[in-house]
Length: 159
Image (cartoon, rainbow, N blue to C red):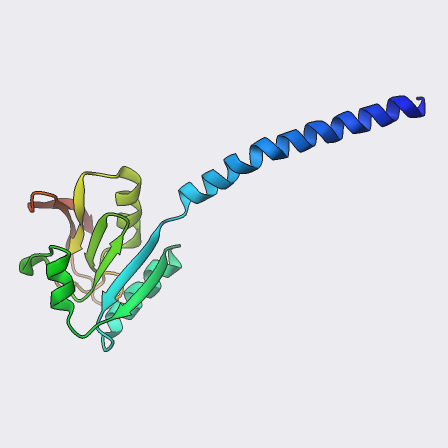
């Protein structure tokens, strides 16, 4: 094959590859961004070990977590609209949603995927066997969807 023909074939192949990368790179980076969870902020007591374990659970499941140790969690809960009977030991915010207590990462991921019109999720109290509360005992517990009108409904049940 003459040199000039080989040159044009190589040049055409490089041009096509370059155009493909130019147009495909933004699409693939957009897909990667869409799959990565947004940043989560967690307000917790500096003295609570179970909260730290829950943060580890969330990080181990791909969440980017910023921790804010605070002395007055009641103020955070009031600001985020968590009524007293739904409270637990820590409060988180991810995007527009509030996450109260020991909510499993898979439920938070489902919330972010389904995007219901809701205030967030809550696991009232501190049930044994929930993420961060692993102690050998496993209690049955519900994750509640906090509707914007304040009425909770069962989002998922565990175990």
